[in-house]
Amino acid sequence: MIITKTPFRMSFFGGGTDMEDFFKENGGAVISTTFDKYCYVNVRHIPRFFEHKSELSYAKIERVVSTDDIQHPAIRNAMKMLDMHEIHLSYDADLPARSGLGTSSSFAVGMLNAFYALKGKYVDKHRLAQDAIYLERVLCSEAGGWQDQIAASYGGFNRINFSAGGFEVYPIIISPERQKQLNRNLMMFFTGFTRLSTEVHQMNNVADKSKTAQLLEMLSLVDDAEKILVDKSADIDDFGRLLDHTWRLKRQTGSKISTGSIDELYEKGLAAGALGGKLLGAGGGGFLLFYVRPEKQAAVIEAMSGLLHIPFEFEDKGTRVIYYAPEDFQFSSEKESVTV
Image 1 (cartoon, rainbow, N blue to C red):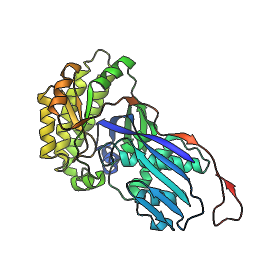
Image 2 (tube, rainbow, N blue to C red):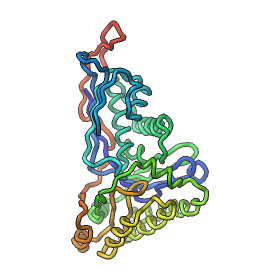
Image 3 (cartoon, rainbow, N blue to C red):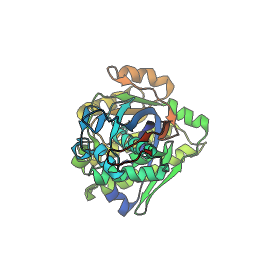
Image 4 (cartoon, rainbow, N blue to C red):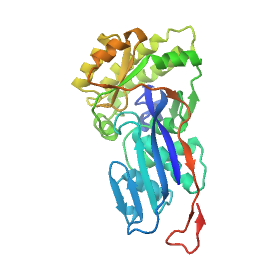
């Protein structure tokens, strides 16, 4: 049996520039972090007492004889990709799916990590990220960028650069005190709306040439935000003000990025004292993030009455195997048992 634990991410700057069509021509970069809310994937080989060959438990339960019969596209394609058979897989998470926190990519990374471990193989974070990108963007044909899979694999507070040659991950080095101050000044609220990010990406078509100017400006803000973080003499509150700037730019890249209800909530947050913020993820729903000085946080919580406030702490470990117990297992198509 294998159990993996994989964090969710929040993206601050550069979202949209991690789309392959954009960064291969213009370059791209994002600043993001993972935080202490996770998804858990439990994988083992299924006992041979049942008519079905694999059992999969997520939002629904599937019992199938053939891998081809699996309805969940990521599970089906991942099992084919790594030649997995006779599997029991279960998924659990601290936060809801389709909420703008890279949950589907965290699941993909955690699942691949578990599959490799069940086969007795170790793969590094770079390989896991690459495999998860290939799984979601190529095998499953899901629209979207690359940042979520990388963040879930590596963990931590990073700048991720994208180019025609691939991606590079650079941890942002700031003092523990400054990082704690930033963490204290960020507040996250669940809007109650969920959506499929791939559908939002398809409707907004961020890679459209007409949106290049906004994306290039959003890309330039990555450098500005990094300077604020690493310069001890800079006002950390400028990070919050810059979040407001990048959110207003992002809203120009697609009609489905925001909604009237989300815009109203955002403006209420600013009126209550937030210096800036953004909707996390591709848009359309999920979690609102605000930058708020401590003395204004009670007022923002009151302004967001009816929404669930989610306290969080940054984390830096990325996906990991938290339980590893190899099995002696004989596949039904083999004559001899193998240790996996």
